Image (cartoon, rainbow, N blue to C red; front, side, top):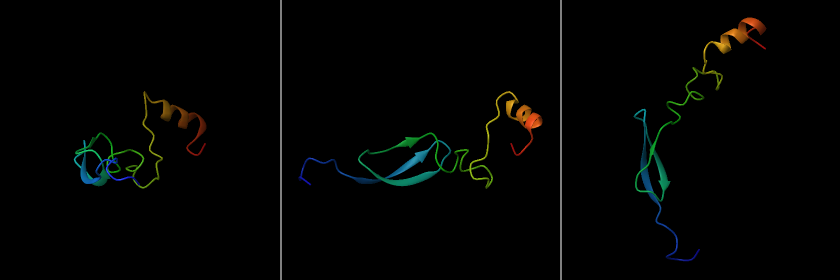
Length: 71
């Protein structure tokens, strides 16, 4: 690598909107994120491995009543 042309990498604490903090290497001085692994539905589905479905107007329940739970 050429010297003097690359930005400086630094270890930064990234703060999520839920209050969790994570540490990353980055060129930015500070980073704020909206969603992280502590608050994202894929990771917080109660151990179901991402099977949490966000229901909009009861559509998921209507589908499950019509076709069953294991369709």
